[in-house]
Each structure stands twice: as structure tokens, then as C-alpha cells.
View 1: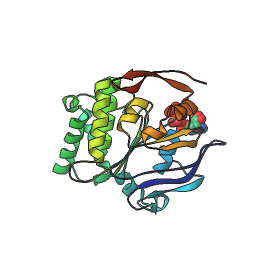
View 2: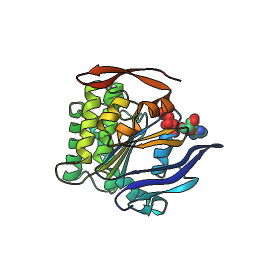
View 3: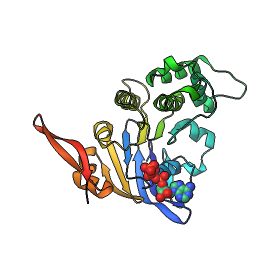
View 4: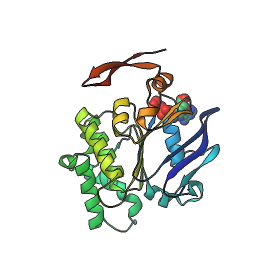
Length: 263
Ligand SMILES: Nc1ncnc2c1ncn2[C@@H]1O[C@H](COP(=O)(O)OP(=O)(O)OP(=O)(O)O)[C@@H](O)[C@H]1O
């Protein structure tokens, strides 16, 4: 499909195990797709396959209809931004420097930061609420602050597609909402380029509220794919996670209050 990043019937093998099996998934510009599933279900492995960081043992990855495998790594990296799970920087670099590294695929080795690079870096820091941290060493930040900096680094690259592995984990409720609202604005800006966002989330309520589609996997296989209202039914949640929602009637509707252990 032109204008999408797609996994087509993808298998990935880790050691001797097929940890992703026959998964087909796509994200198009303008969409936020949530990849959900229990621990060890293959979410991170699938993201890595969609970036070309892990080979697909079967199936293929297509970027705008062309196989990713045949593409130059640098141009693919320019188009697909990636936030790994537990992204960290071990060097005591200043926050602004770390975020500017997100422009790396745009920079030639001999060129400094252009006005456009600087604007992208400052814009990304503002979106992730880390402008006030710009001159601090990244190693001296709290866990949530560091996560926001690593997210800003991805945004600074202005990629067409963003693959984000648990970007909301470790953020306080304010910054979780701010992150998801920023992603929604990046996916569908009032004007300018639309972006496709695929993100791993463990928070079902955030997924239901912000994702256009949810792809639910368990043991490496697809359980559901569709709008949150159908993909996150109480039945599919129980099948995937073995929990049931505790429902609370509120203002004429019913909202999940908490989860209890299911079968
Ligand atoms: N390098 C590796 N070598 C062997 N097995 C691996 C490797 N990396 C991951 N696995 C296994 O592959 C399976 C899928 O792992 P993956 O990291 O994709 O899960 P996940 O859905 O992202 O989990 P989580 O929610 O805990 O982050 C797990 O059973 C894991 O133990």
C-alpha cells in the first residue's frame, strides 16, 4: 500500500522460538496505532522488524509499498523515527546536545546545525516540556525527565513514521496526557505533513482514548485489530491479559475503574 508502513504476514525468530507469527499490521500518515499485548508477546520484536533491525523469517516490511529490505539504511532512518524501550544516554551530554543527535541522519559530517536543525531541536524540546532542562547533563535527570528528552530526540528528526516502544511508561499523568496530545497533533497537524505513529502502550485507558486503531497481540499472534471500541472489548482484554475490567457507572456511561485478575 502506498503511503503506509506495513508488516505483511511477518514471522520473527529469536533463538529457536518464533516469537512473532504471521502478523500483518499497518500504519498510515495521520493515524495513531496502539500495539498492545502482555509482557513477552512480541511487541518490541515486531517494532524492530518493522525498522529492519531484526530480520523477518517470513513475510516482509513495506515502506510506501517498497520492501524496506532493499532500502538504503540512512534514508530509512530519516523516514522512520524509533524510540527503543528504556532508551538512555550514558554520556553526561547536555540535553540540547542529546536532542540534536536526533538530526543526525540530516547532518553531513562536516556541517554544523543549520537554522532549520536548531528550530527542530528547540521545537521538539518545547513539545516534550524539556526546554528548561536544555543545559543540564542528561545523566543528572530523573527517569521521567530523561524519557521526555529521548522522545524529543526522536521528534527532532521530523520523521514520517514514528515507532515508539512504551513512550508513556515512567511519565506522570500530566506528561502522559501531554505526550499523547503532542502525538495526536503530530499525526494530524492543522496544516503540513501528516505522520504515522505506531506506539506500544500498556495503559488500556490511554490507548482507548488516543489510538485510532489498536493491534492486540498475544504469544506473537494477532488477537484483534480495529478501533479501540471493538479491539479492546472486555472479552479480548481478558483473552490477552487475563484481567477483567471493574466497571463503574458514571454519567450515563460505564467506565473501567480498575482491573481484577481474570481467568
Ligand atoms: N535477544 C533475544 N534472544 C532470545 N529471546 C528473546 C530475545 N529478545 C526477546 N526474546 C524473547 O522474545 C519474546 C518477545 O519479546 P519482546 O521483547 O518482543 O516482548 P514484548 O511484547 O515487547 O514484552 P514487554 O511488554 O515485556 O516489553 C519473549 O519471550 C522474549 O523472552
